[in-house]
Length: 218
Image (cartoon, rainbow, N blue to C red):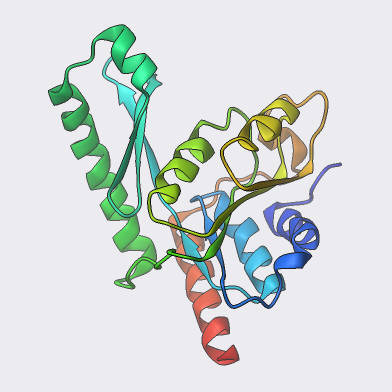
C-alpha cells in the first residue's frame, strides 16, 4: 500500500491504535522530524497529548555511520557495548561525541518545544511514532532511553516497516504496531507518494497546534 503522505499514513496508523483512544495515561511521542506529521494525526485521533522524543546517534569518529550508541531526550545515554568493546573506543572519545550531539539535541529541543518542559513519562503508556522502520536503530535507541524514564508501557507505532525489524523490536517494546509490513521493503520513502523532508518549521507548527487542541479539550 502506498501512502499519499505522512498525514494520511498517520490517520491509517491511528486506526490500528484505536484501543488507546481517550485514555488519560496515553502520550504520543514523535521521533523528529519525519515522525511528527504522522504522530500529529495519531494524537488527534486518540485525543492524546503530543510531544517529541529526540534521539541522536553517537557515530564513531571517521566512521560516523557506525553507531557507538545514542543519546536521547532527558539526558539518557545508551551505549552499544559490542562496538565499543570490539574497537576499544576510549571513554573520552565517547564523551566528546556525546557532548557534540548533546548540543544539537538541546538546540532542537529548545527550537521545537519553545520553552515547554519535556513531558513526564513515568507510569504512562507512551506511543513512540516514526514515519517508518528501516534498520530500526533510532527506534531501538529511543525505546532503550525511554525505558530508563519509567513509563508503564512502550508502544512502537509506524505506518510501514521492514517485517524483520518490526518482529525484532517486539523483544524491546511492549507492543509494536506496523500498519504495513511489505515483503520487499527497500526503503521507507518507497511507500509514500510524497516523502518530502519535514522542516523544523512544520515540526514547531504541528506541536503548537496539538498543544492548542489539547488545551481546548481540557
